[in-house]
Image (cartoon, rainbow, N blue to C red):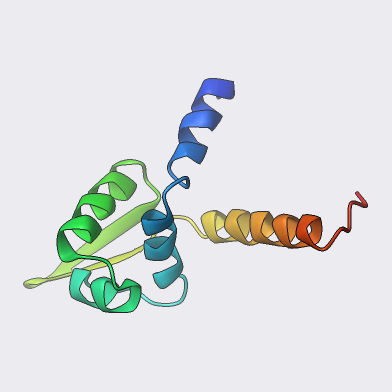
Length: 99
């Protein structure tokens, strides 16, 4: 059964802006490491490190075809969750505190 600690650990994965940039870059396309580096402007070593972490946490998945490895979002619920959080923050910033 999922408990508060599991949820807290899950949300910690989104506390790094580099990880969020990587996830956002994969919102519409499956990308290689080099393509993610280009889209996010993060260093290749940082991208590789964060991809490993996100893959181990089952936020991302990868597929190897020949020598090419592409990364994608493991479950589209992740994108919905991030969109909902962004909308909530937008509403709070705009002073709209209605439920």
